Image 1 (spheres, one colour):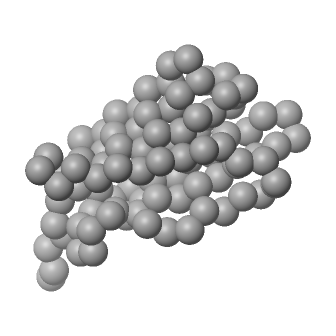
Image 2 (image 1 turned 180 degrees about the vertical axis):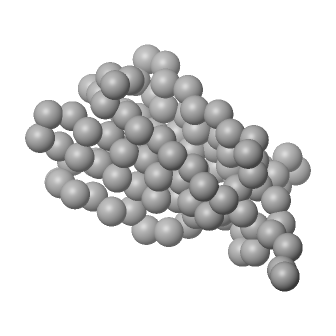
Amino acid sequence: MSPSTHTTTQSFPTRAVYDRSTGRLTVVVDALPAVVDDITVTASSKRIHLRIEREETTFERFVSPPVRRHGFTDDREAVYNNGILTVTVGTARRFRR
């Protein structure tokens, strides 16, 4: 996984878990005290971008596929519940051309 970038000193605890048997990566962020309108999640085939903006504080994290030569699939879900952001993304081997 790629390193995090924090634009301020505040950070949010984050954990990424890869399940090889299902090919899915789950990223869990303790985002309290943010509300759902403070959170932006984008995902491409090469990375997940998490951004939390609250008042004068911005937190960003980029997550790459956990296995080399793999990319993220369109199998994606993000849920924010009780201050916990859970992002689950499928992975698959990228084919060379």
